[in-house]
Image (cartoon, rainbow, N blue to C red):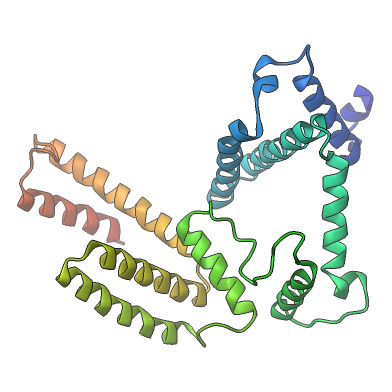
Length: 275
């Protein structure tokens, strides 16, 4: 694409830009490319793939469109990187990835690209799961509705995804209030386990309790991971405010008494809650 086309404001076709990105990646991995890029493997790139995905999530959360544009690009680069490695090893190419993805999207949306009919998002999801189940078989080992949720997901997010998949085949609580009854049951059982003092039982019952809380969040239309992240941020704000209050009085959190910590914490909480 000529520089004059860019200067005049003529948009460059996404296909051409994607081809340019593939060329850049191939050059980075070439013998005359970048030593760091040439040295990378699938295993060494795993941490970067996760990091870039979380940076996309952070950009979405803070609502910065410019940051989202950049972070999506960084995440896409990781996909291109993995495809380049596969191509070098004669396994598959980016064209294979794109073809497979496109075919799957068409196949799993027969109400858009075929003659099937769905009326609601729930019906579309149920149809997706039914098609996915038919596609699964001995070749890829997928036989369960719950397959496809990575074990490497954060536990709260994984719990919500597993519950969502089960709900698509109508294995679910009727509503959040009904699910709350399970939370109360699990609280009692966790208390009993703590009273007995059996660490393995405490671990199991606390896991059941957390899982049941995720159900309540999901059925309330909330994301459990987001809810906990918001609480962590709230705790950090109040804790740093407490530290500042104590420092102004000539002490620190490590030196303060329990009573002083309580007073400083309540003061920080009150200031935050004040309209």
